[in-house]
Length: 80
Image 1 (cartoon, rainbow, N blue to C red):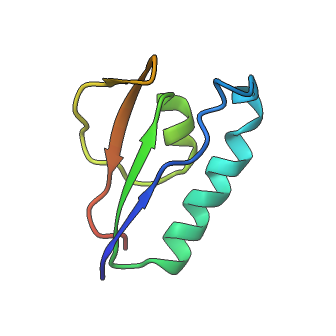
Image 2 (cartoon, helix red, strand yellow):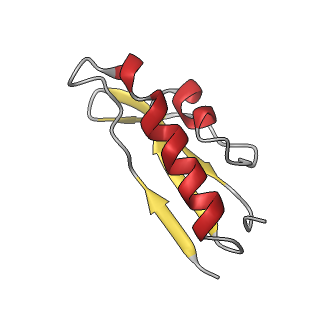
Image 3 (cartoon, rainbow, N blue to C red):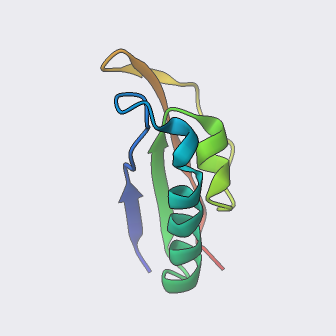
C-alpha cells in the first residue's frame, strides 16, 4: 500500500484539452490494475478529465488558484 500523486497535463497551455481524455482513461486503468490497495491523489483543472480516469474519487475540496488556473485535488481511498 502507498500513495500515488499524479499531476497530468491540463491541456490549457497546449490547447489540447479535448484530446486528453484517452490519456486520463489510460492513467485510471493503469492505476486501478497495478496499484490495488494504494490511494491516489490527482491534480486537475477540469473535473471532466478527472472523471475520465474512472477512479472512485472521494468528495473533494474547493478549487484553488495555481498559475492563473483553478485546480483541484482529487483523491481516492484505497483502490480495490
